[in-house]
Image 1 (cartoon, rainbow, N blue to C red):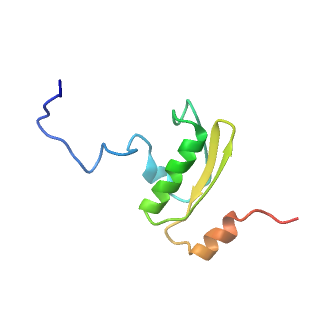
Image 2: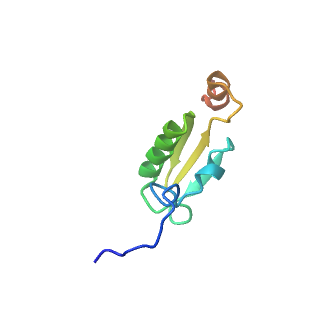
Length: 92
């Protein structure tokens, strides 16, 4: 049976709010690991990071490394070109 609530703040508690997105999207490069930081497959988490970037209108760069995802979001003060320069693969 459905639970009746006295109230609910709909600005939080929906979607992927269990993740600290505001912290994670600060522009630093982070490595998160399945079992410690998230519970889904690493490829699924990679997709969630990309979706979150789209929702907040920031570019993302991600790499899956086994059960971990390395990622960064575009910084608020960073242009798209600056972000791409910061995250593009090195050339030999």
